[in-house]
Image (cartoon, rainbow, N blue to C red; front, top):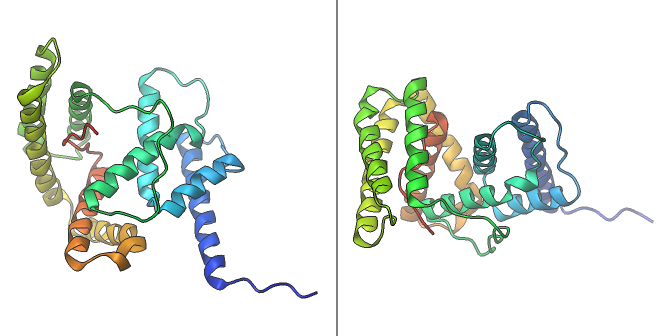
Length: 247
């Protein structure tokens, strides 16, 4: 009996999912200092689910980075990190990417695992200050960023001074100020990126949007493209998102 022919489209999609999973495996190995954690069995189903939802590879990497960053803050590592541990962070970053770009899909995004939590406003601001200071020290951003860092640090002092937490109008005003600082940071950061790097970032942004392109109006695609470029500039320079989304 002859073998049933395989639809080339199905074969291509399967190959793309396998490539996605393989790239995640390689990245996780690198993050674990060379310790190989295989993406097989339930882990393969988890990661292939990200690919099928349209999670861009670099968005998945950023989610993994976010888990490792939090893991390192707890002290010396005790065991290699499995990809399953990163699920909530990957889905968080994907949610943020979708909101920033205005992307919506017919396929429902998987729910976060139980226990996943958002940072409080003071925790968010503290993390922003730490990452901005680190980026400044490494030379990723120059002296022009110092006033921005000072503005965020002043907000952190203000948040810490509120013994009962930042609430009501004060909270709304603080979130609005963070959004303004974020826009200023991106204008400064884009100007600091050289032309060759920006061309590469533009291509990567278009690649991220490719799975969604056919269903997007030109104006929506333009906004999504700019948001994707901003995110990739942040990743390239090691910058945080200053704006706060407490959802």
